[in-house]
Amino acid sequence: MLQRYPRSIWNPAATAVVTALVILPLVGVTILAPKMRSSEGIATATQLVVFPVVLGAAVLLYLYFRGTESGEAGWLTLCLTVYAVQGATLAGLRTADVDFFVGRPEWVLLVHLPVGILVLTAVVFAARAPLRVDPMVAGLVLGLFVAACCVAANRLGPELPMTSPPMLAVDLVLVLIAAAIAHAALRLRDLPSWCVRRLAVGTVALVVNQVAISQPAAGATSAVAVVAGVTAAVCMASAAAAVLRWALLEQSSAVVDLSESIAEIEASNRHSRARLHEITNSIAGIAAASSLINRHDAIRAEDRRRLEEMLESESNRLARLLGGNRLVTNGSREDGRPHGSEPRLLDVDQVIRPLITGQKALGRRIHWRPSAEVAVGDADAVAEVISILLDNAARHAPDSETVVEVVRTASTVEIAVRDDGPGIPAEVRRRLFEWGGRGPDSNGQGIGLHLAHQLMSSRGSSLRLDLNGIGTTFVVGLPLPPEDS
Image 1: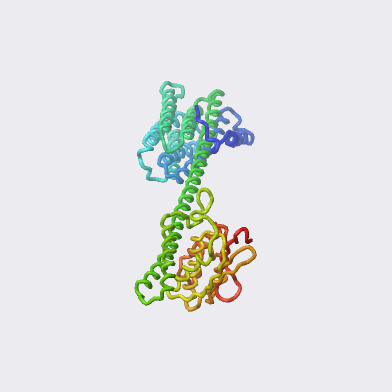
Image 2: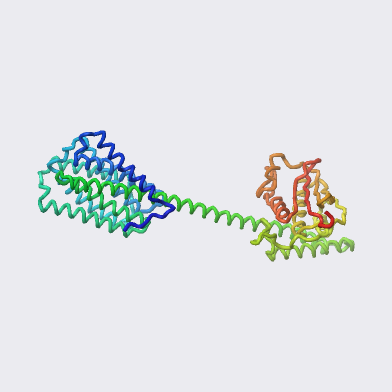
């Protein structure tokens, strides 16, 4: 019993279409060519239609072989091509001259004996023997050679009685060889079982068609030839088309899976690089402050206190970063909420002051006035964003003074970081917050602003570029507490 096709690959309607494509040309040939309307002529017309269809199935199987590099599919392609080419050639000769093989049709069957044995050998060893030739080219050449041998034997060989016991034995042996080929095909593992089963049935039907058409003209044998030929064509064409579609869908699914894997790797890489970016920023400020405290004994007590506060603040933030409690790339957990400290009331000055101290410890000119403003936000995220903006200002406008200004609006507290450097080119602005977005003259990696934008947008805050005035101004917007908005 034939195994059903997978629903997503093939359906009865597709099989009906293939059947119609086989039968309709056969009907057309018998209508347009009056000399083909005899029982023998209809049987010959069947081969004229069936073998090109089988050749088409071989082409589809060849495409499957090319796409999957399946050695078994390659050997099956070669065998199908041999049968299809020799059969189509002989059918064409019969069409040109219906009596072409009359008198010596038994020689065609005798030539097919060694051919069948070779095909059986190829199928048996398909899983073990590497295919070193192009199966389609080799099949075309061998098929034409077999057809030439049939023509030569028919013209040169003596007449043999088709009904003699030896010839009947030849017919039986050919059918048995076809059954052996089908059995060997069922043992192949590279192709789905529903495909090889139909190819096996098609092989037996194809040989029955050739045996029946070589018998003396009779309505019964011609009917057998027609039914067997149509069965072979439908089974082989539908199986080859379905297995090619199956392979394409499998490869498409594999490409999707590979793309998702690559995306996951890229996301993990971005996560690691963004976390490293945060850690590096914290360590740089800590190292600078530590160096000042350790090397300058004459440092003022107030400055020392502020440096120590900055060290404590940045060390605590660094510990939270290293603890892995916050996803830096998109700021979301599996439950959809941001990682780390949840947005809460924060003293803007307490967030900014350690950062200003760290920047000054690095020798940078910063102007900032405490504002005594309170907002809602994630303190670690805001600190990281301000640190990124200050570092960018120092990198791209090293000779200018950076101004940090806090302004209260109707619904937000805005923290503006401004420099009077060259500004950002217009062609860079549209991708400024994208991963890797940076200008042609920038030595950065294009990570900082992307990270800053993600940190703010994922926590109900905002980061934007202000195009008013000279230089570059970035504005962080934090919501006001509910009672103040």
